[in-house]
Length: 474
Ligand SMILES: [Fe+2]
Image 1: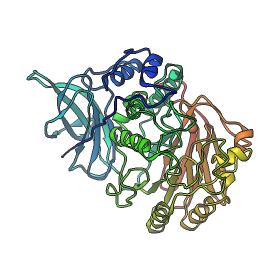
Image 2 (image 1 turned 120 degrees about the vertical axis):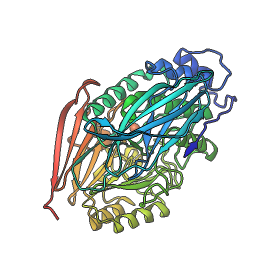
Image 3 (image 1 turned 90 degrees about the vertical axis):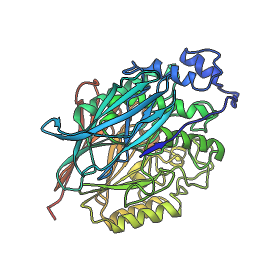
Image 4 (image 1 turned 60 degrees about the vertical axis):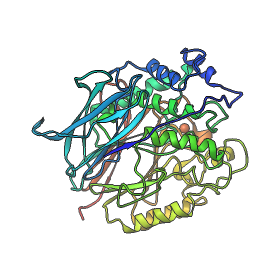
């Protein structure tokens, strides 16, 4: 089955602050282009070496279920005919290959294909073959591997990154380098999946945390982010969480918010309400899945508020954040239904704030310090009632862990953001400001959480802090 998604944009310049021409100037590319897509193509090429002239970025794996996985592919500057071969790995080899139908990806187009009839918790390899226009011979364009959704209770590992704040601007190239380093280091460790906790991209042309000003910018942002992730997501299925810089906040104008949503859904195959029995949202912004003995529930904290929570507006309050009734009821339902031993929540920040001062509290900072503020106190009650062990979040750009009534509030660090917030902003007393990622080892009777500084993209990195939860076997 082939699912087609395409991103489209407008040629109008809608922002006085930054036009597409400005962006091209910042990236040093293709000055004066008026052809939609050329800027995008050249911008992406500027950030990293091309591994294949046929695919603009490495394949992105998403929606790993017990019997299928989705592969998202972006073509380069020529139309290609593609097919994928895939097979189960036994003793490092694939004995028999299955093959998808041929499908076309237009030049600079995005398409998805689903690899189906797979077995749960099983290791597969895949190969992407491309038939360039006018050619009669297929060429191997890319390869990867993955493990399908685990249903046994054997140990597994996953990685969590957050707040890369990727933009296509030259001045922000350092963020891109940090993300590359973290992604490479995670690849070395071979997790079964990756969580990305928001502010993965950064809208850059309106105001702080503002909306998109051009429909094409969404594609640029996700494309550059995918370049930063590199091969990691070709062999590790990834799940995205929305933060406050994705251009999808409830206080953004609906049209521009739609552009951001469309770009995310085109480039990132997140689960929707039908992917897993846990369900979620059709817009792929909150969802849940169970991996082995762990329930993972992903929440969108910025998409359903009625008040404006921009920094410094003094409109939204620390205690009026909300998930909205639909998402909150879904969360309660999934927590009450699950008999998984481990239960984890993933969100950009808590549904309230208690930072170092009022401004930062309104902005949702402070993690576990806000456990009894506003709607977060309802989440705290739910987590206690149904036995959630860890709430993973980002937003504050440091690693810290606060335990409240036996529940860990773990801020996972940042993998790109140039700003590290201190006690004045967050109220945290003990925290780590190094860039890095969080590594989670899930076992039958224990969960170990480590914060890892990514020193290079070829090594496992340096563990700066670890905590472990242990429970007797059920
Ligand atoms: Fe952030």
